[in-house]
Image (cartoon, rainbow, N blue to C red; front, side, top):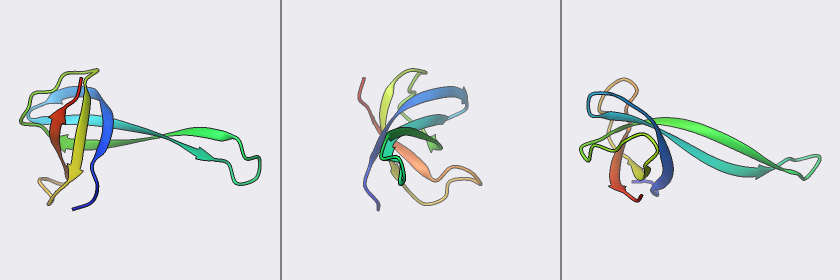
Length: 76
């Protein structure tokens, strides 16, 4: 398994699935300025996280066509 990622739940409208947004900062190759990048992941959720919760997710076997992550814990 790969390392766990921490992100914010932005949608919890599906049954047992949440959409988690991971935000990272990368340095622009030419201008050397930090740029915010975001990526969205669908994660299987047995913990019933709500929108706005900070959660830890980890990669797992494919659960459906789009869901390849699982929520490990609700941080806040």
